[in-house]
Length: 177
Ligand code: IMP
Ligand code: MG
Image (cartoon, rainbow, N blue to C red; front, top):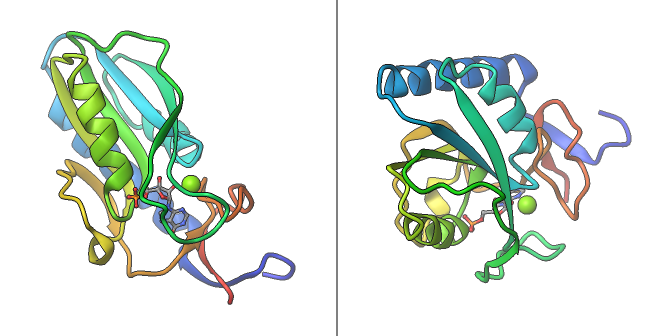
């Protein structure tokens, strides 16, 4: 991986495809015959690559929307603070809401976003994350659909960034020190 700064690949492209396909099946099964509208909400910017792949594996009519929150500066350590940078366009009231995240780390971002979205009275609220770092959890978050647990390492690629870079890598890798 010359010039990338990535020293090790943690999730290869082929594994990503399998993870996404599996999640798509689970999610499709969950919403099958449920009735009502489904809105899939991605948290920007990290979730957009995963979200693009994921929605094509969900076989239920849906609309997509995005929300931008920021929890990290340019470093690799969580500040623990979440700010709403861009809100949803769509109303979620009375709809089935599926919240999509790239990675759940301490859970701080998700906990706040979930609380806020619950207050907007969706008919149901489910959570899907591509990656999960359970060893780092500080806030309890119920994850309904989880792609893969990973160890406590800072990862990049497939939408995940370090200082806004590396999002375009087609795999998930560990950044060298
Ligand atoms: P949390 O609030 O601590 O759960 O942090 C969640 C957010 O931090 C995610 O949406 C990511 O944007 C970012 N994040 C956490 N761990 C990583 C990582 O290993 N690589 C890149 N971004 C990460
Ligand atoms: Mg990020």
